[in-house]
Image (cartoon, rainbow, N blue to C red):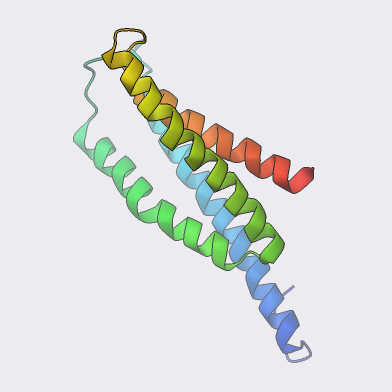
Length: 144
């Protein structure tokens, strides 16, 4: 739906919101695909990109950092600004559940590591766990 002269103000605003949501989804997919392809290329030689002691090419490291520190917050701000009240509640629940788990589980894992009970906390595992739990909590809240 594109804005035109016969649309009401609310219809034009809704059309803009839907268009921005589609842009956010496409940009998020492109960012994720770009980072995923980059990690695939780094791992193509048989050595895992996340292997202990493995360094990344500086350009790739900067690109990932820029994507995470610049593009991701812009996508998140746009996603929350274009969400209605119900969708915003779903997003907030997912972020709260993931954040709650992260702030509870990391210190416990760290303490148990320092006590010799667990291996050193894995950065990738913690981030993926947070992200996965956030998505699961969002889906639960939205589709329950």
